[in-house]
Length: 344
Image 1 (tube, rainbow, N blue to C red):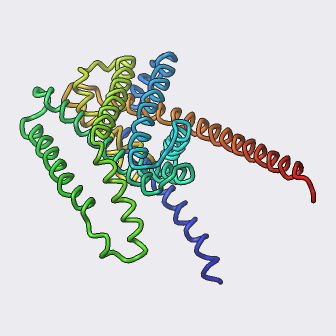
Image 2: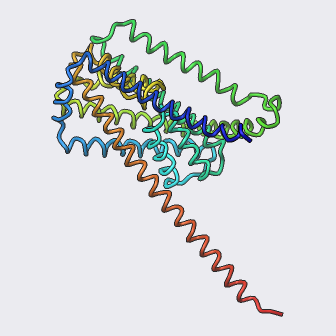
Protein backbone atom coordinates (compact mmCIF):
# COMPACT_ATOMS: atom_id res chain seq x y z
CA UNK A 1 0.00 0.00 0.00
CA UNK A 2 2.83 2.37 0.84
CA UNK A 3 4.41 1.88 -2.56
CA UNK A 4 1.06 2.48 -4.26
CA UNK A 5 0.63 5.81 -2.52
CA UNK A 6 4.11 6.97 -3.46
CA UNK A 7 3.79 6.34 -7.19
CA UNK A 8 1.36 9.20 -8.01
CA UNK A 9 3.39 11.68 -5.96
CA UNK A 10 6.66 10.69 -7.59
CA UNK A 11 5.15 10.90 -11.07
CA UNK A 12 3.82 14.38 -10.29
CA UNK A 13 7.24 15.44 -9.06
CA UNK A 14 8.86 14.12 -12.23
CA UNK A 15 6.29 15.98 -14.33
CA UNK A 16 6.96 19.25 -12.50
CA UNK A 17 10.71 18.74 -12.72
CA UNK A 18 10.35 18.13 -16.46
CA UNK A 19 8.33 21.33 -16.88
CA UNK A 20 10.86 23.34 -14.87
CA UNK A 21 13.74 21.92 -16.89
CA UNK A 22 12.04 22.80 -20.18
CA UNK A 23 11.21 26.32 -19.00
CA UNK A 24 14.79 26.66 -17.80
CA UNK A 25 16.04 25.43 -21.18
CA UNK A 26 13.98 28.08 -22.98
CA UNK A 27 15.16 30.79 -20.58
CA UNK A 28 18.79 29.73 -21.05
CA UNK A 29 18.42 29.69 -24.85
CA UNK A 30 16.93 33.20 -24.82
CA UNK A 31 19.60 34.52 -22.45
CA UNK A 32 22.36 33.15 -24.69
CA UNK A 33 20.62 34.51 -27.79
CA UNK A 34 20.19 38.01 -26.40
CA UNK A 35 23.73 38.01 -25.06
CA UNK A 36 24.88 38.25 -28.67
CA UNK A 37 22.02 40.43 -29.97
CA UNK A 38 21.08 44.05 -29.19
CA UNK A 39 17.99 43.68 -27.02
CA UNK A 40 16.98 47.28 -27.65
CA UNK A 41 16.65 46.71 -31.40
CA UNK A 42 14.63 43.55 -30.81
CA UNK A 43 12.24 45.43 -28.53
CA UNK A 44 11.90 48.34 -30.95
CA UNK A 45 11.05 45.94 -33.77
CA UNK A 46 8.34 44.29 -31.67
CA UNK A 47 6.88 47.65 -30.66
CA UNK A 48 6.78 48.79 -34.28
CA UNK A 49 4.26 46.08 -35.20
CA UNK A 50 0.81 47.71 -35.51
CA UNK A 51 -2.25 46.26 -33.79
CA UNK A 52 -3.94 45.36 -37.09
CA UNK A 53 -0.99 43.13 -37.99
CA UNK A 54 -1.43 41.20 -34.75
CA UNK A 55 -5.16 40.77 -35.42
CA UNK A 56 -4.54 39.74 -39.03
CA UNK A 57 -1.83 37.22 -38.19
CA UNK A 58 -3.72 35.63 -35.27
CA UNK A 59 -6.84 35.31 -37.44
CA UNK A 60 -4.75 33.80 -40.25
CA UNK A 61 -3.05 31.44 -37.79
CA UNK A 62 -6.40 30.09 -36.62
CA UNK A 63 -7.72 29.89 -40.19
CA UNK A 64 -4.69 27.82 -41.22
CA UNK A 65 -5.39 25.49 -38.30
CA UNK A 66 -8.98 25.09 -39.50
CA UNK A 67 -7.47 23.69 -42.71
CA UNK A 68 -5.30 21.43 -40.53
CA UNK A 69 -8.42 20.27 -38.66
CA UNK A 70 -9.94 19.08 -41.92
CA UNK A 71 -6.68 17.32 -42.78
CA UNK A 72 -6.56 15.49 -39.44
CA UNK A 73 -10.25 14.60 -39.62
CA UNK A 74 -9.77 13.27 -43.15
CA UNK A 75 -7.02 10.92 -41.99
CA UNK A 76 -8.64 9.59 -38.80
CA UNK A 77 -12.01 9.13 -40.51
CA UNK A 78 -10.36 7.38 -43.44
CA UNK A 79 -9.02 4.92 -40.88
CA UNK A 80 -12.51 4.55 -39.33
CA UNK A 81 -12.78 7.07 -36.45
CA UNK A 82 -16.17 8.45 -37.51
CA UNK A 83 -15.72 12.00 -36.15
CA UNK A 84 -17.86 14.93 -37.27
CA UNK A 85 -16.36 18.40 -37.73
CA UNK A 86 -17.50 19.66 -34.32
CA UNK A 87 -15.87 16.72 -32.54
CA UNK A 88 -12.73 17.07 -34.66
CA UNK A 89 -12.48 20.77 -33.82
CA UNK A 90 -12.76 20.05 -30.10
CA UNK A 91 -10.07 17.33 -30.25
CA UNK A 92 -7.72 19.36 -32.41
CA UNK A 93 -8.03 22.59 -30.42
CA UNK A 94 -7.51 20.70 -27.15
CA UNK A 95 -4.25 19.36 -28.57
CA UNK A 96 -3.23 22.78 -29.90
CA UNK A 97 -3.75 24.32 -26.47
CA UNK A 98 -1.78 21.51 -24.83
CA UNK A 99 1.29 22.28 -26.94
CA UNK A 100 1.67 25.43 -24.83
CA UNK A 101 2.21 23.28 -21.73
CA UNK A 102 3.93 20.20 -23.12
CA UNK A 103 7.51 19.87 -24.47
CA UNK A 104 6.64 19.59 -28.16
CA UNK A 105 3.81 19.12 -30.64
CA UNK A 106 4.00 15.38 -29.95
CA UNK A 107 2.57 16.02 -26.49
CA UNK A 108 -0.29 17.93 -28.08
CA UNK A 109 -0.91 14.97 -30.37
CA UNK A 110 -1.26 12.71 -27.32
CA UNK A 111 -3.86 15.01 -25.75
CA UNK A 112 -5.71 15.29 -29.05
CA UNK A 113 -5.81 11.50 -29.35
CA UNK A 114 -6.98 11.14 -25.74
CA UNK A 115 -9.96 13.42 -26.39
CA UNK A 116 -10.67 11.65 -29.69
CA UNK A 117 -10.72 8.27 -27.91
CA UNK A 118 -13.87 9.40 -26.09
CA UNK A 119 -15.47 10.87 -29.19
CA UNK A 120 -14.50 8.44 -31.96
CA UNK A 121 -15.57 4.95 -32.88
CA UNK A 122 -12.11 3.37 -33.08
CA UNK A 123 -9.00 4.05 -31.00
CA UNK A 124 -6.84 2.31 -33.59
CA UNK A 125 -8.16 4.67 -36.26
CA UNK A 126 -7.36 7.69 -34.08
CA UNK A 127 -3.81 6.45 -33.43
CA UNK A 128 -3.02 5.51 -37.02
CA UNK A 129 -4.73 8.56 -38.50
CA UNK A 130 -2.89 10.82 -36.08
CA UNK A 131 0.47 9.28 -36.97
CA UNK A 132 -0.22 9.64 -40.70
CA UNK A 133 -1.43 13.21 -40.17
CA UNK A 134 1.73 14.19 -38.31
CA UNK A 135 3.88 12.43 -40.90
CA UNK A 136 2.13 14.45 -43.60
CA UNK A 137 3.01 17.65 -41.73
CA UNK A 138 6.66 16.63 -41.62
CA UNK A 139 6.63 15.79 -45.32
CA UNK A 140 4.98 19.14 -46.11
CA UNK A 141 7.63 21.01 -44.11
CA UNK A 142 10.42 19.05 -45.80
CA UNK A 143 8.96 19.80 -49.23
CA UNK A 144 8.72 23.52 -48.47
CA UNK A 145 12.31 23.56 -47.21
CA UNK A 146 13.45 21.69 -50.33
CA UNK A 147 11.60 24.13 -52.59
CA UNK A 148 13.17 27.03 -50.75
CA UNK A 149 16.62 25.45 -51.03
CA UNK A 150 16.11 24.92 -54.76
CA UNK A 151 15.13 28.56 -55.32
CA UNK A 152 17.88 30.20 -53.30
CA UNK A 153 21.07 29.13 -55.08
CA UNK A 154 22.77 32.43 -54.28
CA UNK A 155 22.33 31.88 -50.53
CA UNK A 156 23.22 28.21 -50.23
CA UNK A 157 26.12 26.16 -51.51
CA UNK A 158 25.35 23.32 -53.88
CA UNK A 159 26.38 20.74 -51.27
CA UNK A 160 23.66 21.96 -48.88
CA UNK A 161 20.97 21.74 -51.54
CA UNK A 162 22.07 18.21 -52.40
CA UNK A 163 21.64 17.23 -48.74
CA UNK A 164 17.95 18.13 -48.89
CA UNK A 165 17.32 16.10 -52.00
CA UNK A 166 19.19 13.09 -50.61
CA UNK A 167 17.24 13.36 -47.34
CA UNK A 168 13.95 13.50 -49.24
CA UNK A 169 14.85 10.39 -51.23
CA UNK A 170 15.90 8.60 -48.03
CA UNK A 171 12.60 9.43 -46.33
CA UNK A 172 10.63 8.20 -49.35
CA UNK A 173 12.57 4.93 -49.38
CA UNK A 174 12.07 4.49 -45.63
CA UNK A 175 8.31 4.95 -46.02
CA UNK A 176 8.28 2.50 -48.94
CA UNK A 177 10.00 -0.10 -46.74
CA UNK A 178 8.06 0.41 -43.53
CA UNK A 179 4.57 0.57 -45.01
CA UNK A 180 4.57 -2.98 -46.42
CA UNK A 181 5.97 -4.23 -43.10
CA UNK A 182 3.03 -2.69 -41.25
CA UNK A 183 0.48 -4.01 -43.73
CA UNK A 184 1.74 -7.59 -44.07
CA UNK A 185 3.27 -8.14 -40.64
CA UNK A 186 2.33 -11.61 -39.27
CA UNK A 187 0.05 -10.55 -36.42
CA UNK A 188 -0.40 -14.14 -35.24
CA UNK A 189 3.15 -14.20 -33.93
CA UNK A 190 2.44 -11.44 -31.44
CA UNK A 191 1.25 -12.07 -27.86
CA UNK A 192 -2.50 -12.27 -27.41
CA UNK A 193 -2.75 -8.85 -25.74
CA UNK A 194 -1.08 -7.12 -28.67
CA UNK A 195 -2.71 -9.20 -31.37
CA UNK A 196 -6.06 -7.41 -31.38
CA UNK A 197 -4.51 -3.95 -31.27
CA UNK A 198 -2.08 -4.77 -34.08
CA UNK A 199 -4.93 -6.26 -36.10
CA UNK A 200 -6.99 -3.09 -35.71
CA UNK A 201 -4.06 -0.92 -36.71
CA UNK A 202 -3.42 -3.06 -39.76
CA UNK A 203 -7.09 -2.94 -40.71
CA UNK A 204 -7.09 0.85 -40.40
CA UNK A 205 -3.94 1.03 -42.54
CA UNK A 206 -5.52 -1.14 -45.21
CA UNK A 207 -8.63 1.01 -45.28
CA UNK A 208 -6.38 4.03 -45.90
CA UNK A 209 -4.49 2.25 -48.69
CA UNK A 210 -7.75 1.54 -50.48
CA UNK A 211 -8.20 5.31 -50.93
CA UNK A 212 -4.74 6.77 -51.48
CA UNK A 213 -6.15 9.87 -53.18
CA UNK A 214 -7.40 11.01 -49.77
CA UNK A 215 -3.86 10.86 -48.42
CA UNK A 216 -2.72 12.99 -51.37
CA UNK A 217 -5.55 15.43 -50.63
CA UNK A 218 -4.41 15.59 -47.00
CA UNK A 219 -0.85 16.34 -48.15
CA UNK A 220 -2.19 19.20 -50.28
CA UNK A 221 -4.07 20.56 -47.26
CA UNK A 222 -0.90 20.27 -45.19
CA UNK A 223 1.09 22.19 -47.79
CA UNK A 224 -1.56 24.93 -47.86
CA UNK A 225 -1.58 25.24 -44.06
CA UNK A 226 2.21 25.28 -43.69
CA UNK A 227 2.61 27.73 -46.57
CA UNK A 228 0.05 29.92 -44.83
CA UNK A 229 2.18 29.92 -41.68
CA UNK A 230 5.24 30.87 -43.71
CA UNK A 231 3.35 33.70 -45.43
CA UNK A 232 2.07 35.04 -42.11
CA UNK A 233 5.60 35.05 -40.66
CA UNK A 234 6.88 36.87 -43.75
CA UNK A 235 4.09 39.43 -43.31
CA UNK A 236 5.16 40.03 -39.71
CA UNK A 237 8.74 40.48 -40.94
CA UNK A 238 7.73 43.12 -43.49
CA UNK A 239 5.74 44.99 -40.83
CA UNK A 240 8.84 44.91 -38.61
CA UNK A 241 11.16 46.23 -41.33
CA UNK A 242 12.76 42.93 -42.36
CA UNK A 243 12.50 42.61 -46.14
CA UNK A 244 13.49 39.22 -47.53
CA UNK A 245 12.36 37.23 -50.57
CA UNK A 246 9.61 34.76 -49.84
CA UNK A 247 11.79 31.85 -50.96
CA UNK A 248 14.15 32.63 -48.07
CA UNK A 249 11.28 32.13 -45.63
CA UNK A 250 10.28 28.93 -47.43
CA UNK A 251 13.75 27.62 -46.69
CA UNK A 252 14.33 28.93 -43.16
CA UNK A 253 10.90 28.71 -41.49
CA UNK A 254 10.33 24.93 -41.86
CA UNK A 255 13.85 24.14 -40.67
CA UNK A 256 13.43 26.43 -37.67
CA UNK A 257 10.18 24.63 -36.85
CA UNK A 258 11.95 21.28 -37.07
CA UNK A 259 14.55 22.54 -34.58
CA UNK A 260 11.76 23.39 -32.13
CA UNK A 261 10.73 19.74 -31.96
CA UNK A 262 13.72 18.93 -29.75
CA UNK A 263 12.14 18.41 -26.29
CA UNK A 264 14.71 20.41 -24.30
CA UNK A 265 12.75 23.67 -24.16
CA UNK A 266 9.16 24.68 -23.54
CA UNK A 267 7.48 24.42 -26.92
CA UNK A 268 10.72 25.14 -28.75
CA UNK A 269 10.91 28.71 -27.39
CA UNK A 270 14.44 30.01 -27.76
CA UNK A 271 15.59 27.26 -30.08
CA UNK A 272 13.35 28.34 -32.97
CA UNK A 273 14.46 31.97 -32.67
CA UNK A 274 18.13 31.01 -32.66
CA UNK A 275 17.63 28.73 -35.66
CA UNK A 276 15.80 31.49 -37.52
CA UNK A 277 18.64 33.94 -36.88
CA UNK A 278 21.22 31.45 -38.16
CA UNK A 279 19.23 30.31 -41.19
CA UNK A 280 18.29 33.82 -42.36
CA UNK A 281 21.74 35.32 -41.94
CA UNK A 282 23.01 34.14 -45.39
CA UNK A 283 20.14 36.13 -46.95
CA UNK A 284 21.19 39.41 -45.34
CA UNK A 285 18.73 39.44 -42.43
CA UNK A 286 19.70 41.50 -39.42
CA UNK A 287 19.93 39.03 -36.51
CA UNK A 288 18.00 41.28 -34.11
CA UNK A 289 15.09 41.68 -36.51
CA UNK A 290 15.02 37.96 -37.30
CA UNK A 291 14.90 37.20 -33.58
CA UNK A 292 12.11 39.75 -33.12
CA UNK A 293 10.06 38.10 -35.87
CA UNK A 294 10.57 34.75 -34.18
CA UNK A 295 9.42 36.14 -30.83
CA UNK A 296 6.40 37.76 -32.48
CA UNK A 297 5.47 34.39 -33.94
CA UNK A 298 5.82 32.83 -30.48
CA UNK A 299 3.32 35.41 -29.24
CA UNK A 300 0.95 34.46 -32.06
CA UNK A 301 1.27 30.78 -31.10
CA UNK A 302 0.52 31.68 -27.47
CA UNK A 303 -2.54 33.79 -28.29
CA UNK A 304 -3.82 31.24 -30.81
CA UNK A 305 -3.30 28.39 -28.36
CA UNK A 306 -5.25 30.20 -25.64
CA UNK A 307 -8.11 30.89 -28.05
CA UNK A 308 -8.03 27.24 -29.13
CA UNK A 309 -8.17 26.12 -25.49
CA UNK A 310 -11.19 28.34 -24.85
CA UNK A 311 -12.89 27.02 -28.00
CA UNK A 312 -12.23 23.41 -26.96
CA UNK A 313 -13.67 24.10 -23.50
CA UNK A 314 -16.81 25.73 -24.90
CA UNK A 315 -17.30 22.92 -27.43
CA UNK A 316 -16.95 20.38 -24.62
CA UNK A 317 -19.51 22.20 -22.49
CA UNK A 318 -21.92 22.42 -25.43
CA UNK A 319 -21.49 18.73 -26.17
CA UNK A 320 -22.13 17.83 -22.52
CA UNK A 321 -25.32 19.93 -22.47
CA UNK A 322 -26.53 18.28 -25.66
CA UNK A 323 -25.94 14.83 -24.18
CA UNK A 324 -27.80 15.77 -20.99
CA UNK A 325 -30.74 17.07 -23.00
CA UNK A 326 -30.88 13.91 -25.09
CA UNK A 327 -30.62 11.74 -22.00
CA UNK A 328 -33.39 13.73 -20.35
CA UNK A 329 -35.63 13.44 -23.39
CA UNK A 330 -35.11 9.68 -23.60
CA UNK A 331 -35.86 9.33 -19.87
CA UNK A 332 -39.06 11.34 -20.22
CA UNK A 333 -40.15 9.24 -23.20
CA UNK A 334 -39.50 6.06 -21.24
CA UNK A 335 -41.46 7.43 -18.28
CA UNK A 336 -44.43 8.29 -20.52
CA UNK A 337 -44.37 4.82 -22.05
CA UNK A 338 -44.30 3.19 -18.63
CA UNK A 339 -47.07 5.45 -17.37
CA UNK A 340 -49.28 4.78 -20.38
CA UNK A 341 -49.10 0.99 -20.02
CA UNK A 342 -52.43 -0.12 -18.52
CA UNK A 343 -52.31 -2.21 -15.42
CA UNK A 344 -53.84 -5.66 -15.50
